[in-house]
Image 1 (cartoon, rainbow, N blue to C red):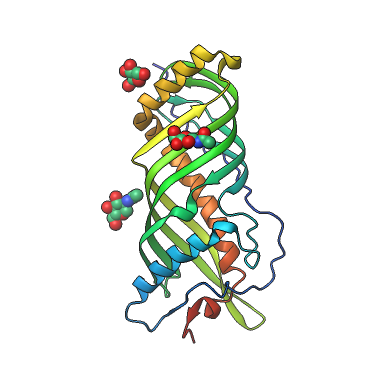
Image 2: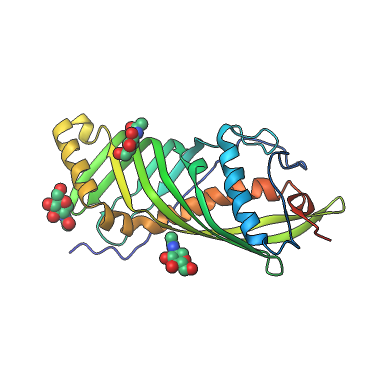
Length: 253
Ligand SMILES: *[C@@H]1O[C@H](CO)[C@@H](O)[C@H](O)[C@H]1NC(C)=O
Ligand SMILES: *[C@@H]1O[C@H](CO)[C@@H](O)[C@H](O)[C@H]1NC(C)=O
Ligand SMILES: *[C@@H]1O[C@H](CO)[C@@H](O)[C@H](O)[C@H]1NC(C)=O
């Protein structure tokens, strides 16, 4: 039995178009919550969900040229320790669907500088190019071409840690860690041009992947969680490192 004890989490995420790290303001259409509000958590939940929806067309103020889709030049999901004996090398990926997210709860611990949130994204679609060469469920898999990996109804728990820093007399938070757990109801895979374009073999392998999606996704879920964590960290840090804390939350002293 080919048991792989090695977990390879090699990933590179570069979602950043160039932007200067200059101070910014939140778009005026974003709601703000007072930290003295007794309903602070509900206010934050609602404003976060609303802000994410508003990012649909990007936000020049915050340096997002496009948010949905989000451009991801390169993303590697390492092989698992079970049936997925292949690294998924993605490039020129567009990530669709984040702005459809529903935020169920959100809270901030200002002492610990930590956020917690729970959300569901109805459809998260990674669309672009892939290459891979290895084995899945003991079957050989090799290919290079367009792909579509779709996560359906994904529940996401977010734990976000920050460190404060001061610049020109104002306090900002740098996002130092962003941990997510992902629980999709279903994942669909479509890898085109497998086996040098052998349509019959390619269709067969895609069917095996989709019929066994749960077992396969579970094996590499850690890689997806780590990748999404890094992507979200980059997005959150763009906002928090550039917009002073007291311009995000009202009644901070
Ligand atoms: C990607 O796959 C999903 C799920 O199968 C499907 O709904 C969607 O239409 C596909 N999108 C494209 C552009 O192929
Ligand atoms: C999120 O955390 C709750 C416990 O607070 C847990 O019941 C749930 O399964 C977690 N969901 C995900 C997506 O990890
Ligand atoms: C994977 O799916 C195929 C059908 O495409 C099924 O026959 C097979 O039993 C599944 N393999 C495993 C290991 O579950």
